[in-house]
Length: 109
Image (cartoon, rainbow, N blue to C red):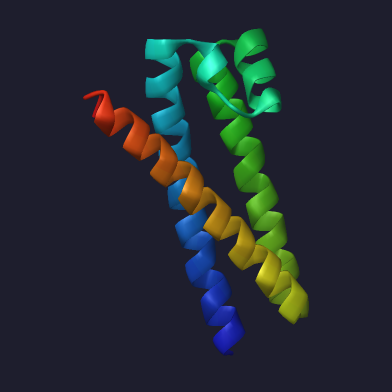
């Protein structure tokens, strides 16, 4: 029961982090160019589809992946899946904090 509650909270946090990562990426890439994006797959999507659509597509795929991971956690509630889910949340927190710091230092937000 506790693991399920934690998984629910992490799901909500990850969805929020996905939104902010996309928003901050949009601001950063719009002002400083595609080279600023550190993820080569994301950079390729932006290059092929443009900034808004590439980001929306990439974030949509990310949300689908997160939801599938959540469903797996819900079904099996294994400790390893919970650790992976928590690690993914921690990673995205670092990504969003890095973007936030970068954009605040430059007065873009």
